[in-house]
Length: 251
Image 1 (tube, rainbow, N blue to C red):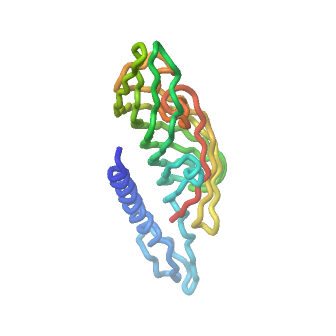
Image 2: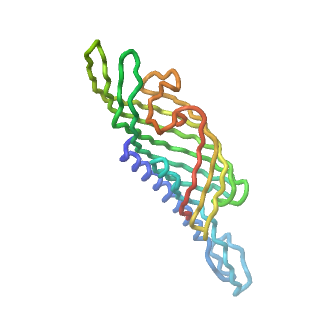
Image 3: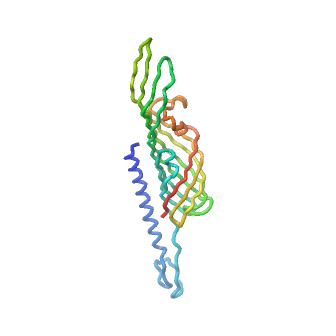
């Protein structure tokens, strides 16, 4: 997944946000002030003359968020949340990482030594999520959630391999790449607050189990997974933790 494709995905998420916002604006049109016997719609109840009635503005149902922990993982994570009703909401998140790391010299094996350099790991993920409010309503309160995460990981590096034969040696230079596709299943708990009905603060944590569904080479054990040294293999398969602290804009 290239940065260009990631930007296109963000544009798609923004389009969903605009469509949902149009629906919210339609609902806000009902939040108007009127006087008795001048209803704004056929369903508006009748009030005595000169009675001022102010209908309550509907709660915000859309939320665009950025994960503040992203810089610590050298990535960019954004989310769009849509409240379906007071208790239920749906969220979709996208993340892109472009990480560089360097291994040291490889260990000797059967007279062959090697070194890796120019290591780059690019990771893209998309995470649909369902949330249920345990307290509060719409975009505010303590919640429980479940999610599915698809992740694509590309790992590339240059390899210098030293082959010894007697007193002579040969150096072979290659460029190698590995690709992994994983599916993660998890649950989480969190709390989201709204400040002045516009600024959202969201914190969550929960376990996730990752399953590697495909790779470009046979992987027989965790030791066979080739990935940058600072990226744990739990991103590829096995149990892990998903957590975030997000700030957003609700509307």
